[in-house]
Length: 526
Image (cartoon, one colour):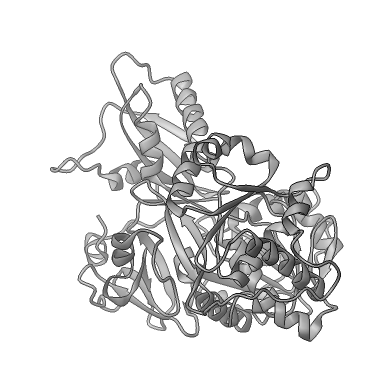
């Protein structure tokens, strides 16, 4: 199955059923398929075809959904750009992916203006209420009226249809290649696992550069269900939409649940339509148990799932079902159908029962990173996709994450790579050395904390900390900004000069329980 078939087949089977709604309008499956084919005609008229890259920079909007399916139908690869990134980050991503065309919302054009001037990259402006001329011109090659023909393009299931960039542990983002087959297989498995029905309504507020957007949307469009799209997460907007649109399936990370439960309208919002909740992040504060209580999950009023995955994997890898969730709360569950999981040591051999090992998976997952053959080979070493997460399995096979091999911070649903933040800080005139770690936080799961050694002549006071935070905010995405900055005379180092971050975590805290030396050695952790 191809990604474009999700909409095409439902347009044939249930063309009058609602497929998508935004705050402005709604589309039936037949209408959505026609509009997707109009965008596909515009792409073909621009010479965009199999293997070409098409980038996009915008918040959630209907045209972005059209572009997702249209690029898939013509065999191109969609490259969503992170709208929180600054010019330097966009320059790298665009230079790496070399798109033939960029779709951009007017609010984000200034941040890429210099890049466009330097490269001459062609653009199409997404429509605005007072200016839709460029979009209208782009759609001109398509016929008017219903029944827009399918694009004449050769596409194979093995072809990639998207490049999703994930930040790299070395500070350079990596583009995960996602194929039609992988996306379809993953969607079919999750539709079955979650019991998605054509009568369901899913609320999507995840940003379009995040795997949580596209790889959850696909489930509902495959199943012939309804997706409600809002521009971004806002607790008040989400609660209002749940009530007004009778949302039945809700996905949110703990940081979002923190805001939803704390909102002034939560108690009075009619949530009776919700029948399925699922989440996919570590929950050190126990917030998700409170969510379960508020929605009556233990009494069976809603079905609650804990899922585990990563961008490169589909993303779904493991699931803990409602009937087992509360007996294994905090566990990510067991392998999804069609996925093989092993806990491996650094020698790629399975670790002994009860020991910690890296979660490694086999199945219809990532085919590699764009333009990164060495990183692709490392990620797929031994025929396994290496997640970088360290887990222990109980006698029944339920997995519990206990550590990470990658120097990664999970903050508010985002992966923050310590090296990225450290590289930015080290460019500041006041910083001699630094280390960035994740510290437990009730809302964000982890907060970004920097420990900094200053150069001579600089004072480590509050004003210096604010200056460094402002500097990172100017140079990188907002979620990379350290919530706290601590100053020290020296960082703990190994005999070869490597910063001993486990000592810093012992001082400032960690979301994971202390690991024994043997556990860390078995997993290959530093």
